[in-house]
Length: 188
Image 1: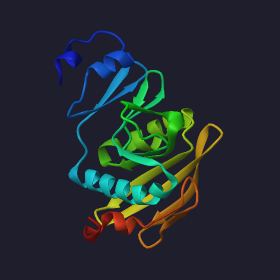
Image 2: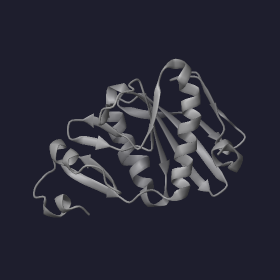
Image 3: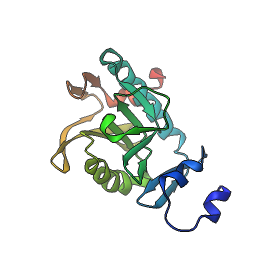
C-alpha cells in the first residue's frame, strides 16, 4: 500500500483519489470509501484483452473507442474501474464520464462475483449506462456472455450466449461475439 493510503483520515474525495497516482492494485472510489483489489488473474487479464480486441474490431467502423481498466466516473465520488469499456470519447484524460459509455463489461472472477453481479450492476444502472456485459467463467473451458440493457433504473437481460451460440447485436453497435473465441488459444 502507498503511504497516502496508510495515513489518510476520513472519507476519500476524488482529489484524494487521483493523488494516489498509478498503483499495482485496482483501487475504486465509492462514496468516500476505497475498494482495493489486487491485479486480476492471468486468465482474467487474457479474457479481458481478447474481449477488448474483439470489441475494438467491431467498433472501429462506428468511431468508438475501447479501453481496459480505465477510470469511469459514475457520478461525483464514484469512480469504477471496469474490465472493458466502449465509449464515445478518445482523449488523453484520466476518466471516462458515465454519459460517454456505450457498453461496460465485467469479467466475473470467484473473488469478486457478488461485486460484479450485484454492486457494480446497480451502480452502473444508477449512472445510466445503457448496456452491461457480464462474462461468466463457468469453467476453464466454458464462458457465458450475459448482455443486459437498462430499463428504467435497472438492467434486464437482453441476450445470453454460450460457446457455439454467438452473441449477435445491432445495438449498441453491430457485433457477433462467440464466447469460444475468447477462450481459443488461436485467437491470441
